[in-house]
Amino acid sequence: MKYVLVTGGVVSGLGKGVTASSIGVVLKACGLRITSIKIDPYLNTDAGTMSPFEHGEVFVLDDGGEVDLDLGNYERFLDIKLTRDNNITTGKIYQSVIDKERKGEYLGKTVQVVPHITNTIQDWIERVAMIPVDGMDGPADVCVIELGGTIGDIESMPFIEALGQFSYRVGPGNFCLVHVSLVPVLNVVGEQKTKPTQHSVRGLRGLGLTPNILACRSTKELEENVKEKLSQFCHVPATNIVTLYDVSNIWRIPLLLRDQKAHEAILKVLNLESFPREPKLDEWVARATMFDTLQDTVRIAMVGKYTGLSDSYLSVLKALLHASVYCHRKLVVDWVASTDLEDSTKIEAPDAYKAAWNLLKSADGILVPGGFGDRGVQGKILAAKYARENNVPYLGICLGMQMAVVEFARNVMNLSDANSTEFDRNAKAPCVIFMPEGSKTHMGGTMRLGSRRTFFKVAGCKSAKLYGNVDYVDERHRHRYEVNPDMVPEFENAGLKFVGKDESDRRMEIIEIPNHQYFVGAQFHPEFKSRPAKPSPLFVGLTAASSGQLDKVLQSCSNGHVLPAKHQFSNGPYTLAAHQNANGHAKKLANGLANGTYHPNGNGVHA
Image (cartoon, rainbow, N blue to C red; front, side, top):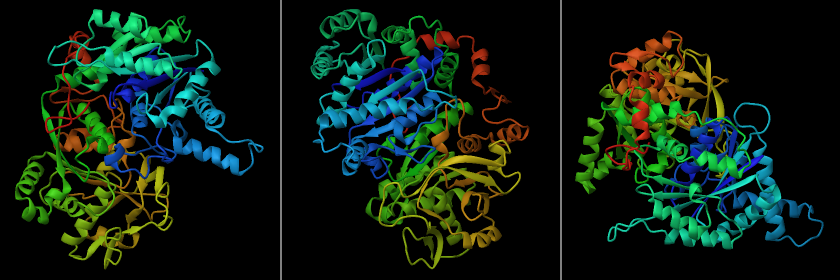
């Protein structure tokens, strides 16, 4: 087993996760099998109880693990399925050691950070690295490890010590350290400054780790004299210094690494020089180029509670992006705080109220994602009502589905007291109820989590067609409340159809309004399994309906195609390969990487 460790210096938020994922992509394109591990130095056992404002979204794995959002990047980039053990936290390590101490496994020894904590970290890495995550038998060839935080953080010290020991344990030729650092440009002088990176590397070496490769974040490509200076003071060959400068979309990062021969430097450190294959990234070239050449837009209103931090809905944004590229549309996300749609805001902040409703009404489609707590719930209900009454494409996820059910009960079935028991324990018409197996005393890991099977119950419904007319699908869940099964007959008599259910027929998974253009709700989170080359069918449905293409997509799926299908619409081919062939200059454009960032504001989203 070979190991690539990615660390970060100077400041947080440099993109270690994307860098680690991109390294994995390039090595995988060389023909190697890749697995990934993320180390988070916080004391939480997992990310399940953390606020989205604190740490971004909680990503859910097939096995029910609630993990850091970077594992979502790994899965999307590498098309793998990780386990909860692929996310190491300080809480997990200390809990493991304390459990062993209580059982007497240390035979009376004094339990200390060194060697007991550091040995546990190393053993964990070796054990998890051997777990296959790509659907094939046997362990991967290379394990990419990302150390969260910044070099110098107090909480990461045990991990740095453990990784220093680990590099000695696995031996030369089996361990490569990639250090991601910042090379800022001061506007006053307009010069790329190397001192922050020099200090970061000095601190790293002082802790017992020596970088083999420097990945320098900067607004523009590093000048040669800057590379030479970094090489001289950081003791890293100039050929092992790569620039991760700002590009037009995230899919260009693996191309940056390939073009700067980062894979050759890594393979050399890992004694894999004899590996003959060059990275085959034609699909990434085509996708990145397609994204940059899209002109026609599709506007999606994202009605959520955590709109102040886009990372709170990172997987939802990625799934929308995958679907929009599939539908050959440039995605524009309008962020709508659900609280701003409520009547109380009309009185307290009329300008915010007016702006929110203007965004909602100007959108081509509406998406209401999941969430917890009663803040902003009425705004989500109002968004669902507007979409239903005005035939606007709507996708509700988890809480977004539940609030669509409540809205339907109140305004179609005239059950004015309809509500979820999450917000009103004594609701007279409890449309959404607490699941019997849930815990009301412990928060972490007590929800209905992970991959569960949904069976389609209505032949020919839009959702079933989008999934390729299969009998069932496996999607990931994260919820404590569910639609009240005792009220389902009333809903269906009123026109709301529950087209997807679990194996017991008691748990509602997918709703649709048949006579609506596209009104779909899912109890599961389809965004977690969306991939750039395999977009989530329900997100494709929303995007296609919002851009006037749903009938053609459904027709293609009805003909036996499973997304992404090789079909052609009125304005041209929609597959990456076909798009690349239709644009002979694709590779030429891809090699001329554009400068400039793409920010999560009203004009677009992170690629």
